[in-house]
Length: 286
Image (cartoon, rainbow, N blue to C red; front, side, top):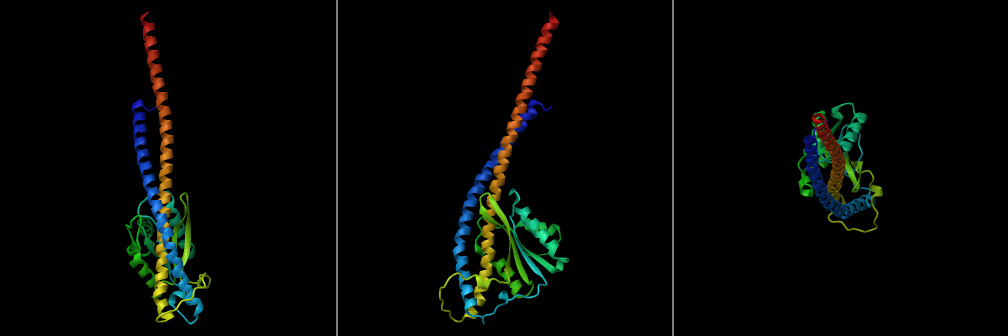
């Protein structure tokens, strides 16, 4: 049985751990609130650019662009959004498990796919398993702005236009609520649901012409989808970390309770032993 000193030491160390996890929970809650606001604030811009793109494409069937054209899929691109740090529960593992299962089911050779990794966890996962990574970005802030991923998003879209990849799918955790996040997979390119995207009857006048505007708008639209998924993923990351730290704090409370009970029992046993020895010593002297 552990000594009183050992049990007391474990109680003290668990209390210190609890203080750390509680502080991390509060920090993550603050970051989650800000990240949720950022994700919601980006929605109007994303919806409007989607509306304009759909308006042009649906009103002028002569407009063509590589991003709107399906072609035989010889190589697939997977854009994976994970975190740069751990202690976020199943946030990263659920995404990476889904990615790995998809690769195993759809491909027989590394030549058939490549990964664009946003976040250190996804990059390290792919590197350790010899999964090809075409591009990556590590060390993003907790509240990333578009300028930080502009180059990666632009180069990723250009990979499709240049036919380096024939489709682009994105894997990330969709933020539902503070306690619920859902692994989500979307096909970003080619853009195939253009007919169902227009929900407005707004009329636009274009200068110089619709085809030239589409040359600019379509890449921006695809880049906005990537950035929107990143904001969504960041909100999910902070929510997952907050939940994980709350669970760790609750577990620390339970452990402290169990250790305190063990400590009291050990102390009671020690006191009883001392009393027994005293009584025995008195009896021996009589």
